[in-house]
Image: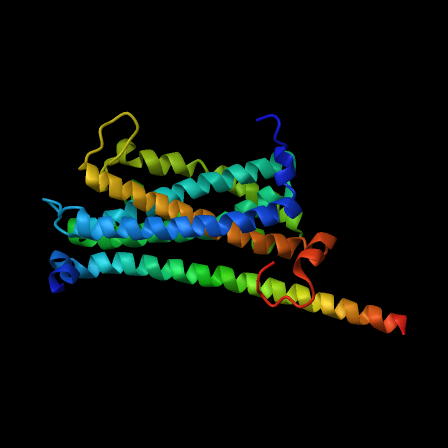
Length: 252
Length: 59
């Protein structure tokens, strides 16, 4: 561990090509996992004895909800590293994560509504789990809006990093909301140290779909951070040497 | 086949969930590519302008 100089990767000229090599790998992995996951979701996983075919929404709803919380934690972690070590790439990573996190949060709410209607009889209820997840969506929006509203990028990084860190308190609230409050939302299907409350093929499918979403998020965030790096380092010599005067959006 | 798409009467909810998710993923990929194209075009335009200015100073 100590032989690797981690700060080397925190410099944009080193991180930019690294992200460029990793993004397509995770993209391919995401496609493969998604194909396998969708096949299992629709053709292998058995019909649920209580919810019929409608329960299959779970295979996108649960990964989206997990991703929404996990991406926020990763985003807050990069924000904290950026605050502590003033590494340029850290702040750019947290900026790159926010739109994807917001997308998964919206999808968790959307698929939740479409699952709630046939099973509970309601698109939406103001209970603890749903409300705290909605707050998460607003936290993502607030994070992006705050960063966009401050002209000086360094100050924007600092202010939005603070917002990300304060907002992180919402994550355990979402996670434990089903235990702390009486809620319509069912409890965790999978929790550490307890036997999962579903058949093993359903569990396998869920984990593969989650891995697919994970790979997708890594691929798309690494691609986005490359644009952010170019945007913010545009006045440096290394960007000039990477881009060249005739680049119209191809490789490089 | 029709049975499969009917999803036991839950077609709207199941396909509404997976369809919108797929749509968002596609839109996000397009937006990321668009952002990359925009910044690369902008950067190379700036560089061409700079190169022309340098040439003008030489002559």
